Amino acid sequence: MELIRIADVQKTYKNGVVALYDFNLSIKKGEFVFVIGASGSGKSTLIKMLYREEKPDKGEIIIGGINVAKLKNRKVYILRRKIGVVFQDFKLLPKLTVYENVAFAMEVFSIDKKQIHKRVLEVLELVGLKHKARQYPNQLSGGEQQRVVIARAIVNKPKLLICDEPTGNLDPDTSMEIMKVLEEINEMGTTIIMATHDREIVNKLRKRVIMLEEGRLVKDYEKGQYNDERN
Amino acid sequence: MKGIRALGRYFRDASKSVVRNFSLSLASISCITITLIVVSISIVISLNVENFAESIRKDVTVVVFLDNDTTKEEIKQIEEDLKKIENIDKMEFKTKQEAADEAKEDNEIFETVVDGWTEDTNPLLDSFMLKVKNVEIIKDTVKEIKKLPKINTVNYGEDIVDQLVTVFKVIEKVCIIAVISLIVVTAFLIANTIKLAIFSRKTEIEIMRLVGASNISIKVPFIIEGLFLGIIGSVIPIIITIYGYITIYNYFGGKILSSSLAKLIEPYPFVYLASLLLLGIGMLVGMFGSWRAVRKYLKI
Image (cartoon, rainbow over all chains, first blue to last red; front, side):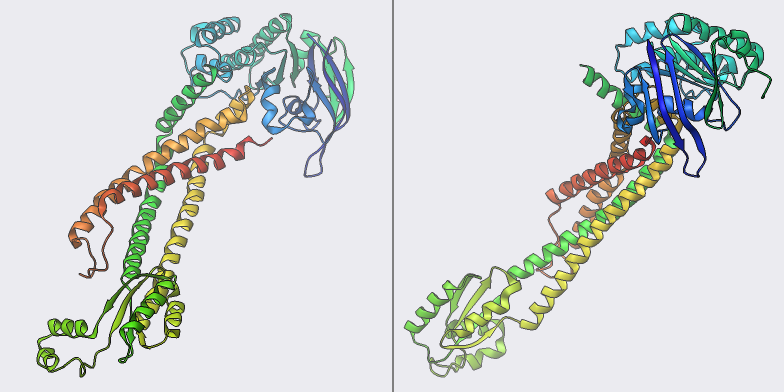
């Protein structure tokens, strides 16, 4: 079943830079997709459009039945509730504990406190941070912080998890740990799209790889690799 | 139930963030406080001026002197005609004998002179003392009175009344403009202060949006926070208004320039009404400021 369909998308920034050109892509439910490409290839723009931080000038982006390209500002939350987003720079609230940061994503739904408690501990266990629930983000290592972000992203059981270079700030070992968590989440049925520069991870995991170059999709491999021919 | 729980959380979050972001809250609060003090002063001045104006307007008397040869029947007729003029509120007839008696009481010097007058030699004239409803159209009223027969002269202290009317009109307008522009300026000033406060919480708003908070549920806590800031900011101005006004009122004994006309407004319930007004302005301005400030971060 198709979860994401991107058709004829074009995006030009105000300064005239064409970020995406004639872009078409289809992603099925349960897939794990790497998006690779050099800086300026349009990779970030693509990811940002998926969670509606950017709007395309032309074309259609349909995620789980929602036409993201036409979504109004005040309705963005409808999309955001169906997806989880993981960033390179974490975006955790420094004044809240690990537990509160994760619970924060559930509180926006006005869910019952007991239910929140149960589910937050569940996801913290999944990412292996249950014992650090009461600590603050600045007391954690980078890898641990990223795991909190992942916990927050999946706490509402989204169908789609969007990761924008989640391992960009982490060392190789920690990166592999994060990837293990992501694979586990993927196995439970969540579709994952991950933008990355990390050659090692892409080659090791052997998932679908989409390569962007100057705003166009140039390669789309099942079980692909990060080839050396260009990078 | 869901809505009530959400609202409870909004209030809790709002009060928490007033405390958590204390230094920035303090900036917004003092901004509100200072401007509300100025607003309070202009309100007190303008309402008192309005009050003086009103009492002076009520005091203006038009004196209509009748010709010396007016008969009693004619006086009756004039009274009827005067009653037909719309702007005339109250009237009182004074015979020339009564006028002479009054003059005698006023000053001893007149006493011997007045005593020498008889009914025929009394040089004073019979008169009507009139009060008008609207002092601003007094000129037209006087014109109408002058059209009646047997009217000798009509006197209402023309120059002074005209001047007062103009002066009060000007003061009133200035005060209204001052109060309104102060409120508008405050609203934007506070919007900017709160914008600074909110800028430091840009990430928080960004994250709230990312995890799927609707725009309204992001705005509401900030607006409630603005409401709190407005309430806290109006405390000192209210205290100053209440105690300050009562002190001034007592110091002057309720009037200014020892004139019985220029009375100050009675402190009760005036100070309470003024306080309510200040509280209302503070709340509105705080909410408006927050709303404007947070709006910026909810685009895209």
